[in-house]
Length: 109
Image (cartoon, rainbow, N blue to C red):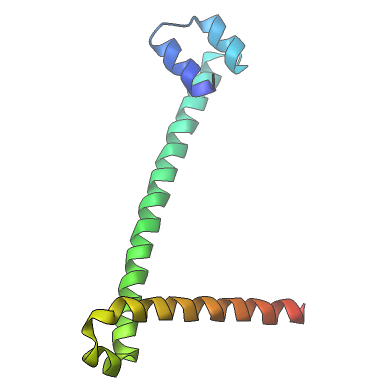
């Protein structure tokens, strides 16, 4: 049983305060309260990071699609349904460039 489960059981009065102290290792209600606040803050941060990651992925996808339409304009005039292939090629190219930059820096070090 982890700390959060123990605190949840304590709140619903299925565990006594002494049992919660024994399970969690905390010695006061203030320490338990601080842990609950820390856990809530940690969960909030995780949700915020997930939202930010999704937002940045969407922005990157839009930017890559715009760049693909610009760079492969003539090809896309003949094959308008191949935008995804062009975006995939740009992602592969960017990944290859990052790997090459890493190789150059590791050789210099």
